[in-house]
Image 1 (cartoon, rainbow, N blue to C red):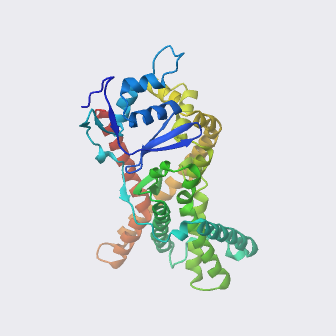
Image 2 (cartoon, rainbow, N blue to C red):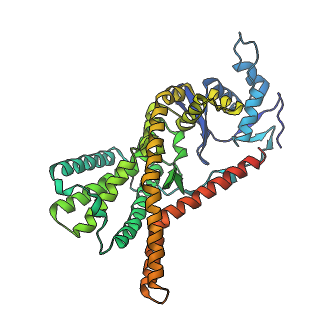
Image 3 (cartoon, one colour):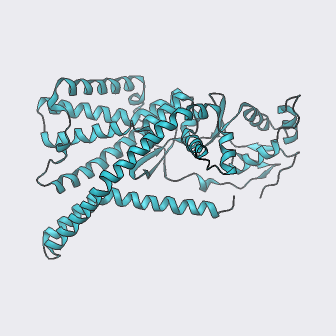
Length: 400
């Protein structure tokens, strides 16, 4: 364990420092680890980077009229814990590269940069606008819930639609990855959940190394992909080109994918864009802490966390918490009214189909495959929830 004293001199790893809404985002772009610091903290980082001792930095950042010196020693200890420090007094610190966070790190080369330039963004925006105009001008092109049933049976239709949704969601995340790569930012891919919804997630934490407006391209790239695909599908519908029932089903999938991004309480792409534009760094956590405080359920540690949140996050969370609670209420209603009944119906259908067919008939295996596909989003979500629970308990027992 690294021991720090007032005379210690730290050698910091390569860090980025990005001003944002009265704070400074400091971190390591190579592992996607960032923290929001007040200006005095950023000043201390700069002085430590220059090779000043902890005592010298403390003297430099403590205001003349302060009753107590700034605790730079404790601050430096936190930097070591974050793995922002390469060595202390020329002694290498223990690297924590293995704790980069969950997910597969993906860092492709910056291919087809023009797609993620202003020209590409303008074309995607035009495609999205044209898609809206088409749906308004040509009512027959609009999606309908029954468009989901485009094959001979409902089970076959929904199973096929599940596979198509997986494929389109994967391409949506690939757009995020490629847009980030165009800016030299690696991404992490993983399967996660938002409440009880299965989610393919591209972790773009490395974008914190960039100014807020430069983050918007990668954050919007997935929706831009959906908008372009939706426009192309609507053109096929309007012109009567291709298998109309399949195209109609895909239109339904893409419209649903875009609408879901408006559910900011699920930390969607629109949520990420909103927080970037508003200058927030940890709005979700701040909102949860404010809600817990309103219910008088804050622990001392949580109260300290809330006090340390940036003022901008607290100001936005004061109104965003109502959006968050309203969204959770709708999600709870949907869970009771639709999610649970449809899940039970699928289970009953699969049981009856398997029992009726029997393992000696082809129909048995057809029903088995269809049932697995239909239930796969729910099953994977359950496994992800179990994984998150295990990881949470493991973190509680691991020494800090």
